[in-house]
Image (cartoon, rainbow, N blue to C red):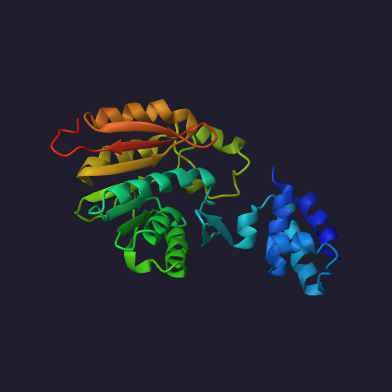
Length: 284
């Protein structure tokens, strides 16, 4: 079997809107070559071992297993993260949260204590840490298995000294204010879960946001006044249809903060920003 035949087999097996790209990425992974090399060597013959790995991988694609779990890693914000079925696959939409966090940190050089609530694979915390070597973070998750993945990613990407991991529900049991609170919490309404292509393939715990998809966000916003610094920032990724609802919840708690709704590259509501102002009575 040559590369061209292997690509065709993988393309037919992939259950994806990007089946052609998925086929190239998987084959590049199996051959340990860049994707550009794969496309330039269509006549290259796979070894028997490579064919066996390809057959096993395409069998997993056929039953709908996500490609990142088959590869065991996935790129996010220019970094390569380990992923497993214990964590949500990092998505490009979440890069907006990272960009806003990095921008704020750049303009607040003395604000160097942050927390990533519901860290999953650790991708948000690690991206912030990797670009701010003086930043100290707490990263929390209710899933011990997810935290193990996040810890391995922190080690792999050389930021483990900057991040303390806590297995807990939302905020850790520590008494200190955070300059920056970031969170990409589960936000899919329970009733919509079974209709999603990812249902049963990615961890339900990382997706299910309760009856209206806002359960965890409501709880985080209610608790946040106890953890945010007087001039701190809160960044919350949201489900696109819940933008106005989340704004309303935020305004009810942070009556005098500056609160903004940001859209992603697809033009969908994606991020709520809550900027606390020092010297004001921000909290209702």
